[in-house]
Length: 73
Image (cartoon, rainbow, N blue to C red; front, side):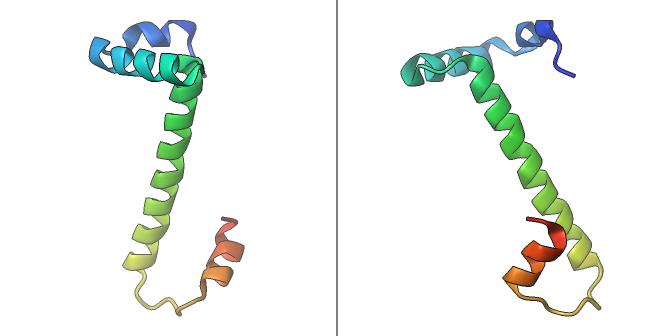
């Protein structure tokens, strides 16, 4: 769960970068934080799928369409 004081724990150099991006885009810092975390989670899920697939080398080869269907991507 997001804690209101979390933004106070961001290192100053990151906050300054976020503040600059926020001013340039006109969007709040929290928007950019949520977007960055969301992208990280998606990348991590992709990494986990790839790692599991690599460990199980006996898996049959499947098309991109079948992959998306199986893993709800």
